[in-house]
Length: 318
Ligand code: ADP
Image 1 (cartoon, rainbow, N blue to C red):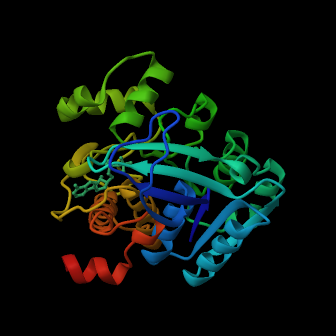
Image 2: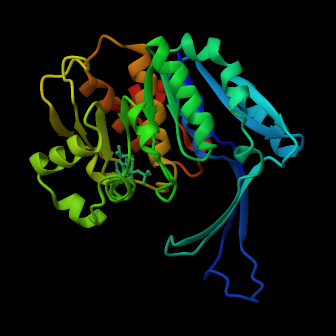
């Protein structure tokens, strides 16, 4: 099974001709739906076929009710801290060029106590993979990773959003990290004091990228997601991951993207699910599956709602 520790948000999205300026009132086409990196990734893991536990904090409000209903519909095993804060929200304006302005109200997501996470010890110890992102309190994520590490459960950290601070102690507890190019640069700057930009990273050859990954996470595996270029992986221990090579790229699946929001979340959930379901398979197979799964998610609008089912992935790509 997969345990995800993370956020749930109600996303409110307005599509507008131009992003609003101070003092301006606009009208735009409105839609709402579930989001939050934690919930998106948990939904992806469940729809990819893995029994999935989602550890989060929800408010006593309509957002909390929505989360419970959606979790039940997807068969997610919800482990909810009942917070006095409002359920997390995101207000998103998107213009016709796809640019956006986003305000997040973390609310309950910032109120996930360490002792609540530790009370889920049984679920974590029984899992194959523990997956977390950085929209929850770092101390709570670290507590979960410590439980997992002590039990020999694999830990996977998606270091997103890029501006969140990852303590060195959390990196040390991570078996696999999965930054996109921007998040990779943020980690290089924070932990190695090196300033690279995403376009520089995109232009690096495999050996150079591998060298950066080895410096960033000497003991573990780094997966850098590269959007339409797929992903790159760099291992400390190839045997552990049943791979033949220390580092390589896996090309993306060819699709017609409509909305790439949540592609990273789809990738992470699917990677964790594939790894948990087939621990004996080569890591390359899991990356291949995660690429296909994430590519298919970009053909649909929405965050958690756009996550495909395993059957859709198999039908589409064979
Ligand atoms: P994020 O959504 O976090 O910015 P990426 O843009 O790197 O992350 O996308 C994550 C994954 O989604 C990629 O590794 C790839 O598998 C898939 N993906 C993203 N964009 C495309 C695309 N245009 N075509 C095919 N696959 C894509």
